[in-house]
Image 1 (cartoon, rainbow, N blue to C red):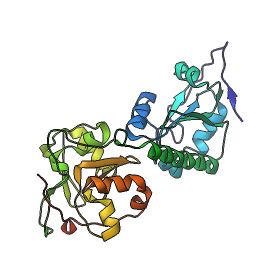
Image 2 (cartoon, rainbow, N blue to C red):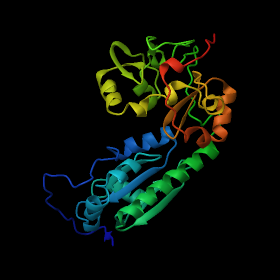
Image 3 (cartoon, one colour):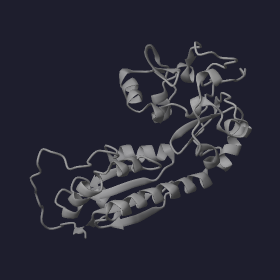
Image 4 (tube, one colour):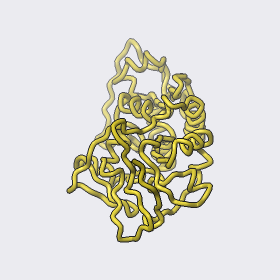
Amino acid sequence: MMCISPSAVTLTFMVSGMALAGNGFGWQLSFEDAERQATQQHVPLLMHFHSSWCGPCRQMDQQVFSSPVVQRALQEGLTAVKVDITERPDLKDRFGADSIPRDIVVYPDGTVETLNIGMVPMRSYLSLLRNTAARGRSIAMTRMDASEAEVIENRNRTVELVPAVQDATEDTEIVGLSGYCPVMLSGRKKWIRGQANLTERYRGVLYHFSGEKQRDLFQQNPDRYAPRNLGCDPVILFKEQRAVTGRIRYGAFFDGKLYLFHTAQSRTEFKRKPLRYTRIQHAIKPAELTGQTFR
């Protein structure tokens, strides 16, 4: 079931003050925000075209987007935004969304594809999201090279994720990202020093933040901004079961997450088969970190 966009007649509906179930959860605030994030993270941009006058659209809000499982999937391996064709006729025309509800995706290679038209049940929509994210990862990896891998590098001097630790103890103070703000680095790819009075400890590592807003964002979802595996090289961790600290100059984003590598060779190996090194979760403690200082 779907709705056809009205052209000659403007319809006005009164909507109650209570938002429909599922609105806002898992969705970006605007198309521009979603497009920017998709570009930065090399993930698919999913657009759900809808409007307040559309019955099937409201049905999807109530039966599909209210599901916590769907809300999580909207943030895993893709970035999603709801586009009201009444408010954004420019996007409606740009992507040809004449009938709604409609889901259209832009993949990392620029391919635009209509995924669905009309009301679909929750399980079918969840499958659509997961398949879209999987295809996006495949496309991103085939395009990944030295210029497109979103490698994080300080061009003036080497900056280490954490001070190199040898025989660390639980009392050792480990400063994440050498004091740079993890939210600014992950979200905007900017090197901004954190303030000494704005800190938060996560998994035994102390992070500094450039402002209270950045600290609040980190507190809400620290796993989104902190480097994977406490900044340890995932290749060495997988092969040798050793927690060796990586270097920011050998960092790269994959699936929206920051990974740090001990050497350029380790990073290159990761890029060949990233899923091999990311599918296993490691419970690393700061006392297990080892490394070596590079000048």
